[in-house]
Length: 249
Image 1 (cartoon, rainbow, N blue to C red):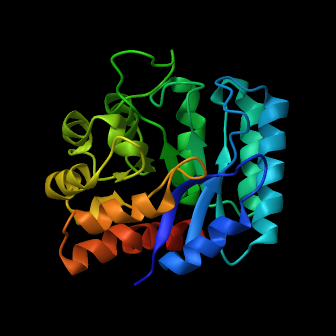
Image 2 (cartoon, rainbow, N blue to C red):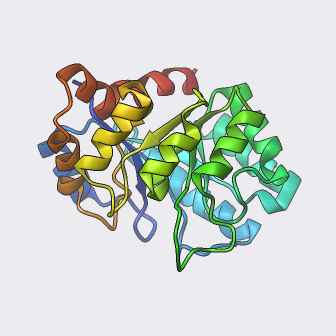
C-alpha cells in the first residue's frame, strides 16, 4: 500500500530529516509540502517568492520523498501568476497552496484556479469554520464549494475537513472536484469515518499538517476509523496518488 501525507509544511525553511526517518518507520512513502514561512496572513510578493525558492531547494534535496505546493497570494495579480508559472514549469511543483490572504471564491483567485485546471494541479485550500478567532479572509467549506462550482475542472483538496466536518461535507458533497484531507488537531477517527461515509472513501485523503503536529497521531486516526481495507488504502495514498499522476505529467 502506498502511503502519502498530502498536507505538510516546512519548519523554519527545511523539512526535518527526523520526520523522514519517522516516515520510514510508519511506512510513509511521500510528503507533499508547502512553505508559508512565519505564518503571515498577507505576505508580500517578495516574501512569497522567497518561501517558494526555499521550498524548491528542499525539493531538490529530497527528490524521492517530497513534492511541492506553490504558495500564492492572489492579491499580486500578474506577479503572482509569474511566480506560479516559474515554480510549476521550472521547479516541477505539483500544486498550489491557498491559505488566508483571500477567500477561496474571491475573483482574485480565478486566474490561479484556471491555470490549475489547465495543468491539472492540486489546489490545497485551507478551510476552517470558527466561532471565534477566525482570520478576516479565512475560507470555510462554503467558499470552497462556490469556487469548485465556478471552476469544475479544478481539483481542490480542502484541508482539515473544513474544520467542522458535519457541515463541511454537506457543503462540498455536490462537487466531485473537491477532495478533503484529514489534517487538524480537532479531527479524529470519528470525523474521518464520517467523511468516508458522507463523501465516499474516494474523496478522502490522508494529511497531517506537519511540522507542528504529531505524525503518529495522524496516522492513528486513520487506523482507528475502522475503514474497510480497500477504503483505508484509498485514504492513505491511493486517491492522492491518482491526482499526482495527472499533476506530474
